[in-house]
Image (tube, rainbow, N blue to C red):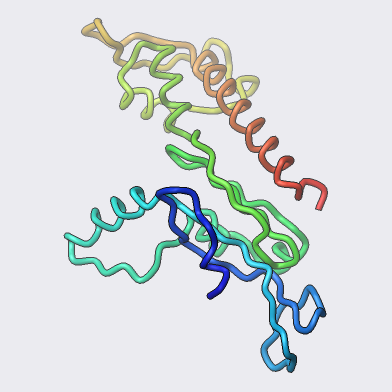
Length: 207
C-alpha cells in the first residue's frame, strides 16, 4: 500500500503495483515472504503508471455498454500470461508485442517483472508507409500488407506483382511485391532498432 503513495507527474495515475522481491529484517531477494517471521517487511515493487485521461476515456468507452471493469491490465502483462512459461521468466526474457499503434515491452528477471515500456510505433506505421509509397488509401495498404506483406524482400521474386486501387485512377494498378516488401522492411528494421535500444537502455540487456 505504501508503494502506491509515490509522487507522480501531473495527470498520471498508478495502474499496477507489482511486487518483485521482498526483504524481511534485512534479508533480501525473497520471492515469497508468506509464513516468515520478522519485524520489518520491505518490498521492491514495479509501479506502472498511465495517463489519467487515457484511462478515463477507455473506461468511458466500455461502461455505457453494460460491461463491468474488474481491472485494467497493461498489454505486455497480458501477453506474458499468454505466451511465457514460469521457467522462461525465471531465466530472464523480454516480451515484445508489436500492436497497431504501439509496441509494448515487458522484461522479466528471476520470475519477476523488472521493466515495462510502451513505444509509440507499431503495425499501423508499416501500413502508412505502404499507403504513401503506392499513393493508395490506408485501407488498401492494410489489405496488401496482410495478404502479401513480408519484411524479407529476398524471399520474394522481383517479377511477382500485386494489384491495388490508388488515388486518382479508376482502375487498379500493378506493383512489384518486392517493392512493397522493401517498404515494409525499412520500417520493420527501424522498429526493431528502437526495441533493441530500449531494452539496452533498461539496464537488463546482459541479464
